Image (cartoon, rainbow, N blue to C red):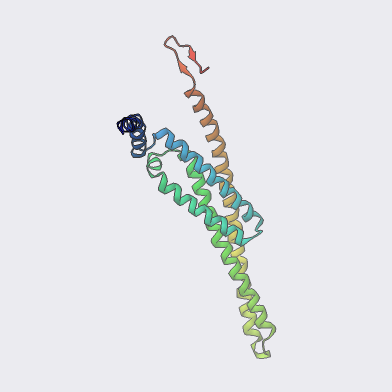
Length: 206
């Protein structure tokens, strides 16, 4: 029994430093540079979702698919704002985050327009159906409703076209910001692995 107790005590002593380090790591927030790098990676993932939504919007291939992607963007953007509140308040990755946020806003605006286009199209269809079944004394009334619905539909499509162009341009700007960020990250990585000697020469890792 004494031997077992001694072994347990030795095991606890050997584990104590690792447990302490684990507790310290859990209680201490990540270093600013590490947190900033993580923020950058999450922003790049968000940008991929933004690009995917932009492709669907440009083709206007599937409203349901577009709205699904918009929902995913909203969740990811909300998670980033919550997870990296401190880093964002410091202005970390601002050059990348602002263009991506602008692209998200443009996509949201286009989503509202696309929804209005669908509503207006349904109104046109309903007015056409009513006109087709109208009595002779009702024709003028339903023709007026149809013209109003068609104007509403045309205006909605024009707004959607405008916001689609804005969204595509915003995504392109975010993509350029990503390319710049990638170059800057590569340069920063090179600086981390190159330290100057006192005499001015460089020390590179083996």
